[in-house]
Image (cartoon, rainbow, N blue to C red; front, side, top):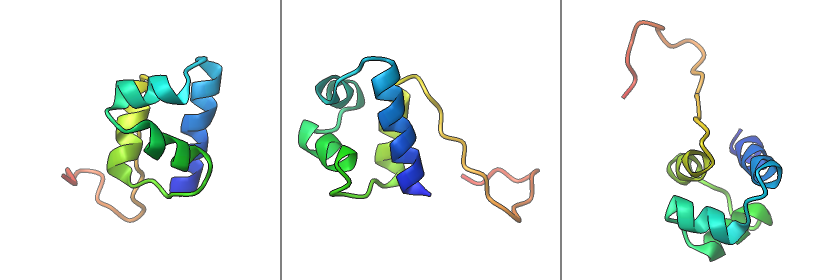
Length: 74
């Protein structure tokens, strides 16, 4: 779920002592958007979640149940 993903991003910010402002600068998102995600006032989409995760040095791995493991789902 996207909310679980955002919660993980928030937790990683805390663990890495990264502020919302720093995450915004590193991810290319606005500080207002980051604040809304962190406060639960806005749901993130996968594109923005990937930007935030990448800024923290994390990768998002999406598991697609029922997908053919040999298929590249780009």
